[in-house]
Image: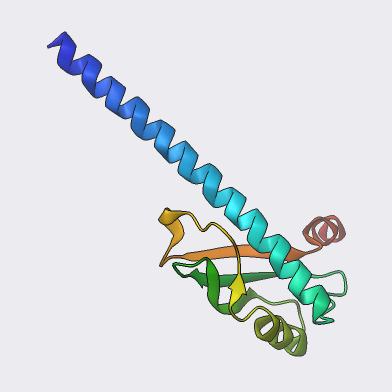
Length: 119
């Protein structure tokens, strides 16, 4: 009975470690995606004018973000459309297996500034 409990506890510990590794790799991927998105927006001349915008996309097997769409507006339809156009098929390296075929949402722009202005 003790052996069974120890084995079960060990399995839970390993599962927890794997979950933490997955969470960490997803966070790292999200950070890379955000940096790539900002660089692409900069190159396309898209200015968020001090606002933030949240985008959601599907992650394909080679790490590209497909179907990028704005889920929290910048406040400008033209800017939102420019963001979606600029981020079409955004390449991001090393997508975690847990995200392939799934979706990711991240925020671009001046989140801290908007939060301070809201206070």
